[in-house]
Length: 264
Image (cartoon, rainbow, N blue to C red; front, side, top):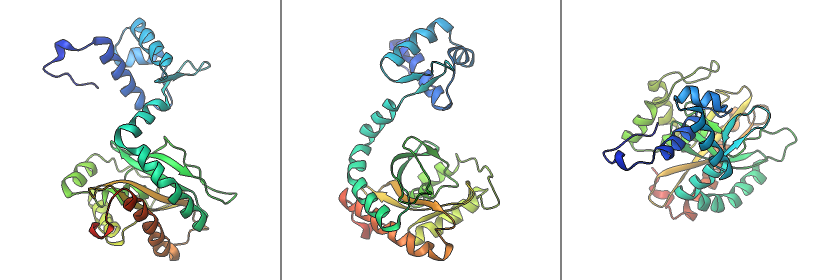
Protein backbone atom coordinates (compact mmCIF):
# COMPACT_ATOMS: atom_id res chain seq x y z
CA UNK A 1 0.00 0.00 0.00
CA UNK A 2 1.02 3.62 -0.48
CA UNK A 3 2.67 4.88 2.71
CA UNK A 4 1.87 8.31 4.08
CA UNK A 5 4.61 10.74 5.08
CA UNK A 6 4.65 13.84 7.26
CA UNK A 7 3.54 15.80 4.18
CA UNK A 8 0.33 13.79 3.84
CA UNK A 9 -1.78 16.95 4.18
CA UNK A 10 -0.57 17.86 0.68
CA UNK A 11 -1.56 14.51 -0.83
CA UNK A 12 -4.24 14.09 -3.49
CA UNK A 13 -6.68 11.43 -2.20
CA UNK A 14 -7.75 10.09 -5.61
CA UNK A 15 -4.13 9.89 -6.76
CA UNK A 16 -3.29 7.87 -3.65
CA UNK A 17 -6.24 5.63 -4.37
CA UNK A 18 -5.15 5.17 -8.00
CA UNK A 19 -1.65 4.15 -6.89
CA UNK A 20 -3.12 1.80 -4.29
CA UNK A 21 -5.35 0.19 -6.93
CA UNK A 22 -2.40 -0.34 -9.29
CA UNK A 23 -0.27 -1.81 -6.51
CA UNK A 24 -3.13 -4.13 -5.56
CA UNK A 25 -3.66 -5.24 -9.16
CA UNK A 26 0.06 -6.03 -9.42
CA UNK A 27 -0.60 -8.78 -6.87
CA UNK A 28 -3.50 -10.16 -8.93
CA UNK A 29 -2.19 -10.77 -12.48
CA UNK A 30 -5.44 -12.51 -13.49
CA UNK A 31 -7.28 -9.25 -12.82
CA UNK A 32 -10.11 -8.08 -10.54
CA UNK A 33 -13.54 -6.63 -11.14
CA UNK A 34 -14.50 -3.20 -9.83
CA UNK A 35 -16.61 -4.85 -7.12
CA UNK A 36 -13.69 -7.02 -6.01
CA UNK A 37 -11.34 -4.05 -5.89
CA UNK A 38 -13.88 -2.03 -3.92
CA UNK A 39 -14.50 -4.83 -1.43
CA UNK A 40 -10.83 -5.73 -0.94
CA UNK A 41 -9.54 -2.15 -0.62
CA UNK A 42 -12.59 -0.74 1.18
CA UNK A 43 -12.91 2.06 -1.39
CA UNK A 44 -16.40 3.16 -2.51
CA UNK A 45 -17.54 1.59 -5.77
CA UNK A 46 -18.21 4.97 -7.44
CA UNK A 47 -14.63 6.07 -6.71
CA UNK A 48 -13.28 2.81 -8.12
CA UNK A 49 -15.33 3.35 -11.28
CA UNK A 50 -14.02 6.89 -11.84
CA UNK A 51 -10.41 6.00 -11.12
CA UNK A 52 -10.31 2.82 -13.18
CA UNK A 53 -12.05 4.55 -16.10
CA UNK A 54 -9.35 7.23 -16.06
CA UNK A 55 -6.58 4.62 -15.85
CA UNK A 56 -8.08 2.67 -18.75
CA UNK A 57 -8.42 5.83 -20.85
CA UNK A 58 -4.73 6.68 -20.18
CA UNK A 59 -3.67 3.07 -20.94
CA UNK A 60 -2.41 2.22 -17.46
CA UNK A 61 -5.08 -0.45 -17.07
CA UNK A 62 -6.85 -2.77 -19.48
CA UNK A 63 -10.40 -4.05 -19.00
CA UNK A 64 -11.68 -7.36 -20.30
CA UNK A 65 -15.13 -6.75 -21.77
CA UNK A 66 -16.25 -10.33 -21.05
CA UNK A 67 -15.00 -10.85 -17.48
CA UNK A 68 -15.17 -7.12 -16.54
CA UNK A 69 -11.79 -7.57 -14.87
CA UNK A 70 -9.09 -4.91 -14.76
CA UNK A 71 -5.40 -5.70 -15.23
CA UNK A 72 -2.22 -3.65 -15.37
CA UNK A 73 -1.14 -2.78 -18.90
CA UNK A 74 2.32 -3.02 -20.44
CA UNK A 75 2.63 0.79 -20.14
CA UNK A 76 3.89 0.54 -16.57
CA UNK A 77 6.40 -2.11 -17.60
CA UNK A 78 7.67 0.18 -20.37
CA UNK A 79 7.98 3.07 -17.92
CA UNK A 80 9.92 0.83 -15.56
CA UNK A 81 12.35 -0.07 -18.33
CA UNK A 82 13.00 3.62 -19.00
CA UNK A 83 13.42 4.52 -15.34
CA UNK A 84 15.89 1.72 -14.67
CA UNK A 85 17.74 1.96 -17.97
CA UNK A 86 16.38 -1.37 -19.16
CA UNK A 87 15.70 0.02 -22.62
CA UNK A 88 19.44 0.59 -23.07
CA UNK A 89 20.02 -2.88 -21.66
CA UNK A 90 17.64 -4.44 -24.19
CA UNK A 91 19.26 -2.60 -27.08
CA UNK A 92 22.70 -3.81 -26.01
CA UNK A 93 21.59 -7.32 -25.14
CA UNK A 94 19.39 -8.35 -28.06
CA UNK A 95 22.14 -8.81 -30.71
CA UNK A 96 24.19 -10.87 -28.26
CA UNK A 97 21.15 -12.91 -27.21
CA UNK A 98 20.47 -13.73 -30.86
CA UNK A 99 24.04 -14.98 -31.27
CA UNK A 100 23.70 -17.17 -28.18
CA UNK A 101 20.39 -18.52 -29.52
CA UNK A 102 22.02 -19.23 -32.90
CA UNK A 103 24.90 -21.09 -31.28
CA UNK A 104 22.87 -23.24 -28.87
CA UNK A 105 19.45 -23.25 -30.57
CA UNK A 106 17.53 -22.71 -27.32
CA UNK A 107 15.28 -19.87 -26.18
CA UNK A 108 17.28 -16.99 -24.64
CA UNK A 109 15.41 -14.69 -22.21
CA UNK A 110 16.64 -11.56 -20.43
CA UNK A 111 15.48 -10.82 -16.90
CA UNK A 112 15.87 -8.60 -13.86
CA UNK A 113 14.92 -8.76 -10.18
CA UNK A 114 11.65 -7.01 -9.40
CA UNK A 115 10.85 -6.85 -5.69
CA UNK A 116 10.67 -10.38 -4.30
CA UNK A 117 10.29 -11.88 -7.78
CA UNK A 118 12.09 -11.86 -11.08
CA UNK A 119 10.76 -10.29 -14.27
CA UNK A 120 11.41 -11.26 -17.90
CA UNK A 121 11.99 -8.14 -19.98
CA UNK A 122 12.90 -9.65 -23.37
CA UNK A 123 13.18 -12.99 -25.14
CA UNK A 124 14.71 -14.47 -28.28
CA UNK A 125 12.75 -17.64 -29.22
CA UNK A 126 14.66 -20.85 -29.78
CA UNK A 127 15.05 -22.47 -33.19
CA UNK A 128 13.63 -25.89 -32.32
CA UNK A 129 10.06 -26.82 -33.16
CA UNK A 130 9.61 -27.76 -29.49
CA UNK A 131 10.75 -24.84 -27.34
CA UNK A 132 9.76 -22.95 -24.21
CA UNK A 133 8.14 -19.53 -24.60
CA UNK A 134 8.92 -17.01 -21.83
CA UNK A 135 7.22 -13.78 -22.81
CA UNK A 136 8.25 -10.33 -21.52
CA UNK A 137 6.30 -9.42 -18.40
CA UNK A 138 6.28 -12.96 -17.06
CA UNK A 139 7.54 -13.31 -13.48
CA UNK A 140 9.77 -16.01 -12.03
CA UNK A 141 10.51 -17.24 -8.51
CA UNK A 142 13.79 -16.42 -6.81
CA UNK A 143 14.49 -19.79 -5.20
CA UNK A 144 13.94 -21.95 -8.29
CA UNK A 145 15.04 -19.85 -11.25
CA UNK A 146 18.52 -19.81 -12.73
CA UNK A 147 18.51 -16.06 -13.51
CA UNK A 148 17.59 -15.10 -9.95
CA UNK A 149 20.32 -17.33 -8.56
CA UNK A 150 22.89 -15.91 -10.96
CA UNK A 151 22.07 -12.33 -9.92
CA UNK A 152 21.63 -12.82 -6.16
CA UNK A 153 24.86 -14.83 -5.87
CA UNK A 154 26.89 -11.75 -6.83
CA UNK A 155 25.11 -9.21 -4.64
CA UNK A 156 26.74 -7.81 -1.52
CA UNK A 157 26.01 -9.87 1.57
CA UNK A 158 23.62 -7.44 3.24
CA UNK A 159 21.48 -7.04 0.13
CA UNK A 160 21.68 -10.76 -0.59
CA UNK A 161 20.49 -11.65 2.92
CA UNK A 162 17.70 -9.08 2.77
CA UNK A 163 16.34 -10.60 -0.44
CA UNK A 164 16.67 -14.17 0.81
CA UNK A 165 14.71 -13.24 3.95
CA UNK A 166 11.70 -12.40 1.75
CA UNK A 167 11.66 -15.71 -0.13
CA UNK A 168 8.89 -18.20 0.53
CA UNK A 169 10.51 -21.53 -0.26
CA UNK A 170 7.49 -23.17 -1.85
CA UNK A 171 8.01 -26.79 -2.86
CA UNK A 172 7.29 -27.78 -6.46
CA UNK A 173 9.10 -31.13 -6.62
CA UNK A 174 11.88 -33.09 -4.94
CA UNK A 175 14.55 -30.86 -6.53
CA UNK A 176 13.21 -27.56 -5.13
CA UNK A 177 15.42 -25.72 -2.63
CA UNK A 178 13.37 -25.45 0.57
CA UNK A 179 15.33 -23.31 3.05
CA UNK A 180 17.47 -20.19 3.32
CA UNK A 181 20.59 -22.09 4.52
CA UNK A 182 20.33 -24.53 1.60
CA UNK A 183 19.82 -21.63 -0.80
CA UNK A 184 22.84 -19.71 0.53
CA UNK A 185 24.99 -22.83 0.19
CA UNK A 186 23.80 -23.25 -3.38
CA UNK A 187 24.64 -19.61 -4.18
CA UNK A 188 28.26 -20.21 -3.17
CA UNK A 189 28.51 -22.77 -5.98
CA UNK A 190 26.84 -20.33 -8.38
CA UNK A 191 29.36 -17.63 -7.46
CA UNK A 192 32.26 -20.05 -7.85
CA UNK A 193 31.14 -21.29 -11.27
CA UNK A 194 29.82 -17.95 -12.52
CA UNK A 195 26.45 -19.30 -13.64
CA UNK A 196 23.21 -20.54 -12.10
CA UNK A 197 21.13 -23.58 -13.00
CA UNK A 198 17.46 -24.42 -12.63
CA UNK A 199 17.52 -28.21 -12.45
CA UNK A 200 13.82 -28.47 -13.38
CA UNK A 201 13.16 -27.29 -9.81
CA UNK A 202 9.74 -25.87 -10.62
CA UNK A 203 8.67 -27.04 -14.08
CA UNK A 204 9.32 -30.69 -14.85
CA UNK A 205 11.65 -31.21 -17.79
CA UNK A 206 12.66 -27.54 -18.08
CA UNK A 207 16.36 -26.74 -17.63
CA UNK A 208 17.70 -23.18 -17.45
CA UNK A 209 21.33 -22.03 -17.30
CA UNK A 210 21.95 -18.34 -16.54
CA UNK A 211 24.78 -15.85 -16.13
CA UNK A 212 24.61 -12.36 -14.61
CA UNK A 213 24.96 -9.03 -16.40
CA UNK A 214 26.82 -6.25 -14.56
CA UNK A 215 26.46 -2.51 -15.05
CA UNK A 216 29.42 -0.13 -15.18
CA UNK A 217 29.50 0.02 -11.37
CA UNK A 218 29.87 -3.75 -11.11
CA UNK A 219 26.33 -4.31 -9.89
CA UNK A 220 24.59 -7.53 -11.05
CA UNK A 221 21.30 -6.08 -12.26
CA UNK A 222 20.20 -8.52 -14.95
CA UNK A 223 20.74 -11.98 -16.39
CA UNK A 224 20.51 -13.87 -19.64
CA UNK A 225 19.90 -17.60 -19.79
CA UNK A 226 18.93 -20.46 -22.01
CA UNK A 227 15.78 -22.48 -21.43
CA UNK A 228 15.22 -25.86 -22.96
CA UNK A 229 14.00 -29.40 -22.31
CA UNK A 230 16.05 -31.84 -20.28
CA UNK A 231 16.21 -34.28 -23.20
CA UNK A 232 18.32 -31.69 -25.10
CA UNK A 233 20.19 -30.00 -22.23
CA UNK A 234 22.05 -32.87 -20.56
CA UNK A 235 23.67 -32.65 -17.12
CA UNK A 236 27.03 -33.68 -18.57
CA UNK A 237 26.97 -30.50 -20.68
CA UNK A 238 25.95 -28.04 -17.92
CA UNK A 239 29.45 -26.67 -17.32
CA UNK A 240 30.23 -26.29 -21.02
CA UNK A 241 26.93 -24.52 -21.67
CA UNK A 242 27.28 -22.40 -18.52
CA UNK A 243 30.66 -21.11 -19.64
CA UNK A 244 29.21 -20.21 -23.04
CA UNK A 245 26.38 -18.25 -21.39
CA UNK A 246 28.96 -16.44 -19.21
CA UNK A 247 30.89 -15.46 -22.33
CA UNK A 248 27.83 -13.85 -23.90
CA UNK A 249 26.68 -12.22 -20.65
CA UNK A 250 30.14 -10.71 -20.19
CA UNK A 251 29.94 -9.23 -23.69
CA UNK A 252 26.76 -7.42 -22.67
CA UNK A 253 28.35 -6.29 -19.41
CA UNK A 254 31.35 -4.89 -21.27
CA UNK A 255 29.06 -3.01 -23.64
CA UNK A 256 27.58 -1.35 -20.55
CA UNK A 257 31.00 -0.28 -19.31
CA UNK A 258 31.87 -3.14 -16.96
CA UNK A 259 35.27 -4.83 -16.77
CA UNK A 260 34.65 -8.58 -16.14
CA UNK A 261 38.00 -9.07 -14.40
CA UNK A 262 36.50 -7.31 -11.37
CA UNK A 263 33.52 -9.67 -11.17
CA UNK A 264 34.72 -11.97 -8.45
